[in-house]
Image 1: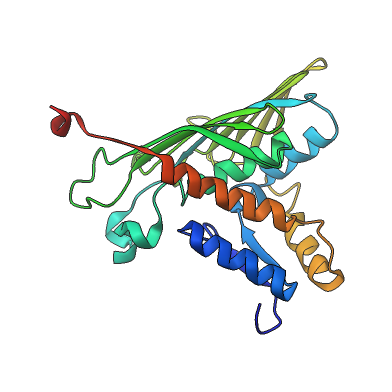
Image 2: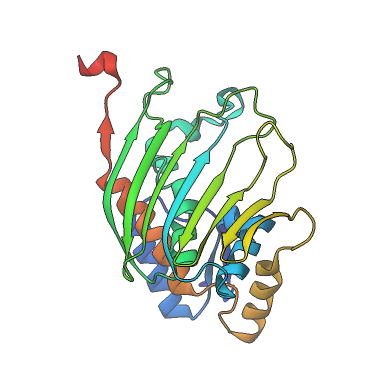
Length: 258
């Protein structure tokens, strides 16, 4: 940004609140964008379509989200920094960032509070700084709520790296997104289930929706607009995952708790 360029980074964009404030100051000083690749919404066609349905009013006003974000660890293929808390930030800061970003977007929140969060290392004693489980509960500034859980416990028998799901409840219906697999039914992903006053519908969306974020971001950079994602939204999702991590209670495994 200091060199006059907009910046685009993978999640999670920060591992400390101090880093976030430095980026906010740089945006203010330079007028450049600091955009974040929250891929579990932006690069999943069923998640994109869920947003379109919500904007169309298909399920009314969203008031609750529940998210599941399991991942396969593949520890032997990970670099050393992956297991160092100072460098990866913690599980809620890392893969939890996807979940919080989705909550803000789908529920239409500009801010939220962390009511409770917790983390643990249940099955990786050889990596004592790794958190292989985390969850959190949030309430948005409009009264919507969220619970999510993330982990590094995907079984080897699953056909993909994680059975990511999002459940969205509105005043007039519900949406379930089965992002990467429909377990024991189809190995394809991008399945969406909609239930509202018109009945029950299943959408198989692989290859049918696309990923509008990327083209919109290019146009935003050219035109200095904020259609793809606002800077406020990108930073708020990052801030909340850092706060969830900061507030998280450590859960001792049973052997240590005795």
